[in-house]
Amino acid sequence: MTIKQELVDEIELLLRYNLDTTQEGIKVHHSARQGLIDATHRLFKKGLVSQEDGGYLTDLGHEAAEHTQAALRILTSQN
Image (cartoon, rainbow, N blue to C red):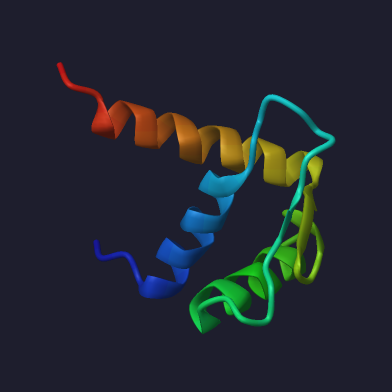
């Protein structure tokens, strides 16, 4: 199984969210890399973020970000 760049960009955005608070969002500016801008639009359409340019995680988005961040911690741990 290969991971397309579009999915990698979505994962990168989910990793940027601070899960310690629901009061902190992100904004993807128009000057960002086009892949991240497009990924933000896709996450919005999927119902994971509250705004087309980022915003806050929805409940579903928070769950997805938790899993994504946990997977990264596991994969990058030094055992």
